[in-house]
Amino acid sequence: MILLTTNTPILLAIQPADFRCGIDGFVAICRRQLAQDPRSGILFVFINRNKTMIRALSYDGTGFWLMTKRLSKGKFAHWPSGKKAITAMQAKDLRLLLSAAPRVKVN
Image 1 (tube, rainbow, N blue to C red):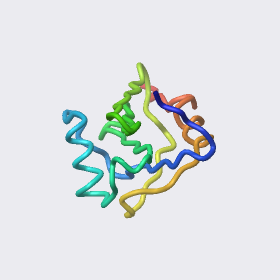
Image 2: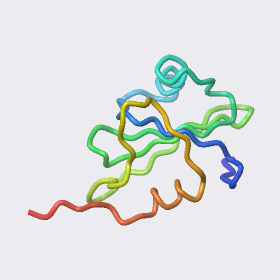
Image 3: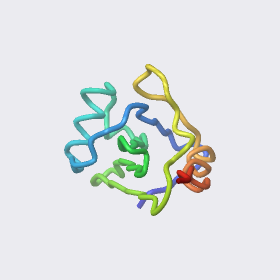
């Protein structure tokens, strides 16, 4: 079970990830690209190239969880940018990011 509290360590991977990979692929990203231990209790959060999906990887002591949120319209508008590989985030900010109204392209 995933428990998200004010003390939950959360790291966002700034650069988009390839969402075709499964749990093992995201574990490898944590180890190789982010230089982090995926079994450390940190919640790792990733975004796809189009900024329409977010995936979160968590280890609960017995196995990995891989969660997905896909928007039906629009994009996640407030994803951080920059040259850093990861950035820390608090649970309240992650909740805001996940629940905020997406940016919708108007034609």
